[in-house]
Length: 251
Image (cartoon, rainbow, N blue to C red; front, top):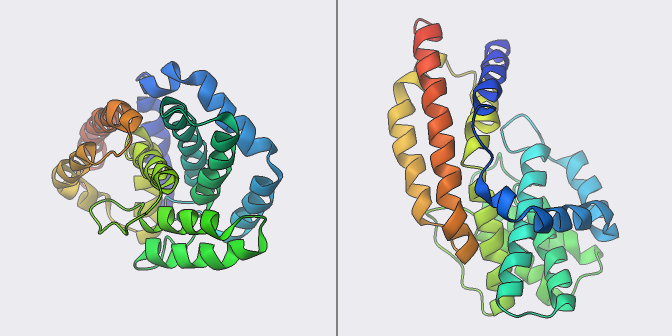
């Protein structure tokens, strides 16, 4: 079954290549590159990245590839939103570090029930050995705690903390777009050894649920660009769905 899903993923990537990238990456290319540069050069992020890479499991659709994308996008969103809010560059740079720490750790307990709660407590304990203030660690904890959709949000008292939390959430939900049908779904189905027929059967209801995420984006930038991520993912998924009905209807 896993080899079949690897073949399907290759086909999905081929299908997705016929679609344009989300406009977010075109409109904010330079800011995305700034977030990427920070991710690749900051020594605190390098240390944390090495830890996460050795700890997280990558067979459930939320491994290191997912984590890196969320981390860099969250950083880009943070820069955009913080600049629009008038924060000075030194504060933006520090908040960028905080949101990237949260991004790296947000799915550290992904295979466990209530993974956001458990991951947030794990992050709080882990980061005590890092050069971060208690308030910064608390912002990271709350961001991880609040990154799931359709769950109760724990209150955050500071505007800077809300900024980090909302940017992490939106970056994570960007992944519900094209990534959902080129990576995440196939990893999860392969892990669970789910028959392809089950995926085909439940696809229409799953897409209906996926579309609900469009109304949950939290930042101004996320609200503008996030729905396009979802619509693009659904469009890619529809082509894949039609392909699977034809090629694997008896699987």
